[in-house]
Length: 116
Length: 110
Image (cartoon, rainbow over all chains, first blue to last red; front, side, top):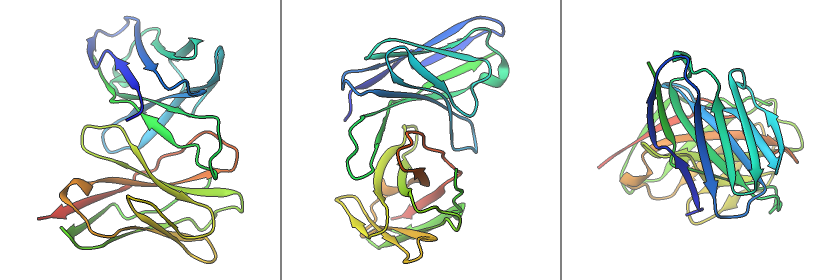
């Protein structure tokens, strides 16, 4: 299994409070991603990073910011949490090496966030 | 991103082969076909990918139609552990991002 951990694994917070989720990898992979998954939906990309201090938006980036100050850590911040951000958040990593077009992504165990 | 169409759900029996279809009629020449699956309460995991030719690995086989407008993921001998949501995804060559659809929920009966 790829070395990816997410913290916290579960969090309950109140509307309007800031929240930071952490993704940590031990694989030295270049790319890191944050997705959210809601009931009845597939995963939707929030933000991704293609290197230290290099990030870009995904399809549902409003209300979220990210930072990557070192290769192994990718932080997702909800500046002011809202109930619509209640979701399961998954981090993923992938390597820059192209193995026959793979760009295989490895996913973390997820963080369940509830905003009350 | 090119769109894929999969059945919402499928059911099969343990130790039998399973064929999971995916339609992608708008696929472009540089799109790779990826399959991921998500077991209950876990993150997705990579299953297989291909471009034009059929592919085999330890988990599954991928059969790609000659016109590439459809593909089929084949689990040769399903086990209870194969019960999951299976996602068929098109990824543009060189692009890092994956766009997940609704997937197919596969149920395996003992």
